[in-house]
Length: 124
Image (tube, rainbow, N blue to C red; front, side, top):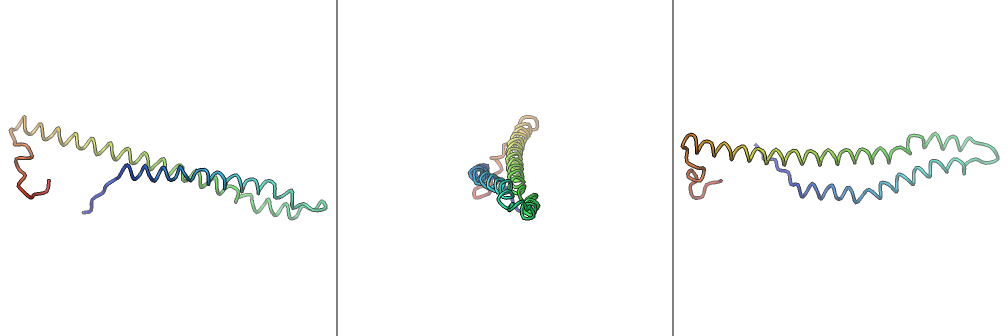
């Protein structure tokens, strides 16, 4: 069976990288929103709105994409952060439980400490 390991510092680095991309997402969001709202007016010629209407129809859903991506990335980053905290907290709790169980076995049952069973060259 493989071993799973979470590197909290590595997760922090990934999340910091996502934060660094925030201004680029914001710029893309603002740019497409500006193009969607102002583009239609520029396409109206001599009172004809066919191009303007086509532009607005074309952009109606597309202008939402950067915002949806921002929310998706933000939600995913939050979930990764929460999961990492839960895993680290669980690891610490398991370590505390193991230590308490070993201490109880030593005190209540007279079992020798773990170090007594480790031979030279064995894995700890």
